[in-house]
Amino acid sequence: MIRIAIALLASTLVAGALAAPKPCEALKAEIEAKIQAKGVTSYTLEIVPNAEVHDQNMVVGSCDGGTRKIIYQKNDR
Image (cartoon, rainbow, N blue to C red):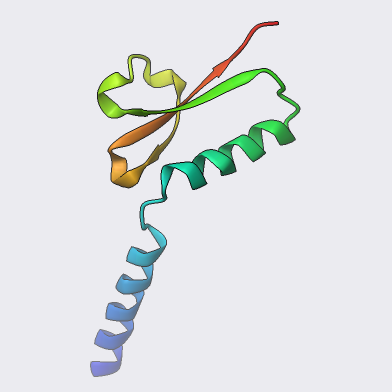
């Protein structure tokens, strides 16, 4: 019984560590790499506070513990 309790506690701690919030710049760099890998050349990624998000469809990431969002806009040529 103690082994089961220890295993559950350990799995809970690991899950919490994996879900840790990412810094905005690190997440933005990951998103940029994915966008560039798809061949998109003209776009804007911006880190903004939650209050400045007007269109939820533009949000591609959440960072700093959910206090800020990364928004994406494709620029027309």
